[in-house]
Image (cartoon, rainbow, N blue to C red):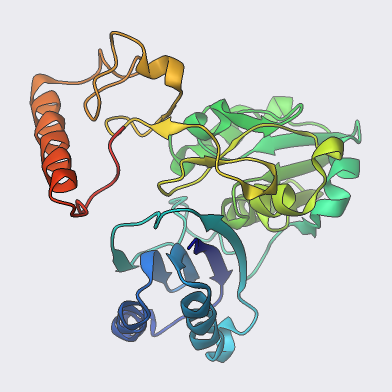
Amino acid sequence: MTYCVAALYHFTRLSDFEQLKAPLQDMCDLLGIKGTLLLAYEGINGTVSGTDKAIAELLEFLRADPRLAELEHKESRAEDMPFYRMKVRLKREIVTMGVDGVDPNETVGTYVDPKDWNALISDPDVILIDTRNDYEVEIGTFKGALNPDTQTFREFPQWVEDNRANLKKPKVAMFCTGGIRCEKASSFMKQNGFDDVYHLKGGILKYLETQPEEDSLWEGDCFVFDQRVAVKHGLEESDYDQCYACRYPITDKDKESSLYVKGVSCPRCHNRMSEEQRNRFAERQKQIALAKKRGEAHLGRRAS
């Protein structure tokens, strides 16, 4: 048996989003679905996993709300359940930029289908920007893309302001994992003097799912926010694992390093961990090992 992993989001006005939490949590629990869904005034965002039937029923439940009728989602497969529990959370934003007035419901860039993406980003008049964080960009990105080198999406607006002098080409194209961050980024750009703004519809995941690998301009793997860590063309699971301490993807070579301690640190973060953090992570890893020995799932993220 494999699991269906559904990444979904939709910008819309959900004035009663707080009242939607309990029914949505109950529905997911009833269907045996796990993952995380975020609700805010501006819409819904999240990734969940379950049987094909369960995911289909959840999507039908969500789209029964007229405001979510056009909700899009992307599906991939996982050999094991990639989440440990189901969480529905209330948030100020479904993707946190932290800038008041940026609203994709009002202003957004031009959507570009994956089949047309290669032609757009090959245009010499286009600046291509990866709106994801540094650890995501590190393991894969589109050929020729600018890396803002941000640690969180909150840093993106300041990066734009600091680099205006380098963003002088007529067109700006942006992309992210599933499409949500570049929707908000394109809205920000449009509101801040950039007129010709484009973004990849469905994000990297839809591109990797639908475009032939032999024609691809994607280089590397795509980080995903679940226990698979990263996926390749065709949305097949990659060979990356993840360091619990810093959340960065790690390879088998990283694990061979003397600086790697399972669940505690990796070569990237070993010198940034305090003694208190090391002890806490070590205790968590011990509990994971004990739970595994008992044949139980430990309720937390996988340590690597």
